[in-house]
Image 1 (tube, helix red, strand yellow):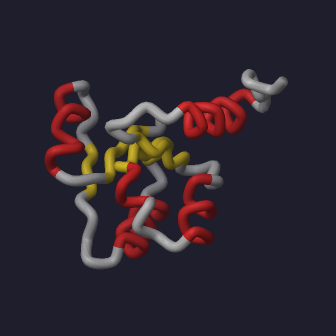
Image 2 (cartoon, helix red, strand yellow):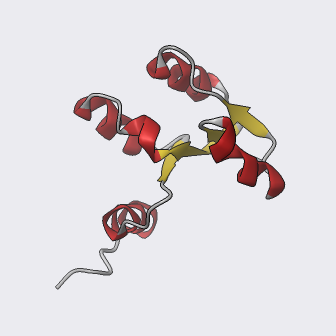
Length: 100
């Protein structure tokens, strides 16, 4: 069974620890190195990642990470952004629920 991990600051990951997630990664000097390390972990299927970290990356790196299938990187922000939710739903079920 695949596990859920969390990538972010201590303040960000604290709540996920209380929710039962036990695998945490703190961003190192080079965020891409940390992400590469996570991608090599075969037991991890989902990575909840602090969106503010992804926003620091180059656009092509961020898109590449957000488009990954295994593990799936799920950006979570303190702010609610419906566009991010829309992209996640399309990736998950293949249907755009907001389409006109």
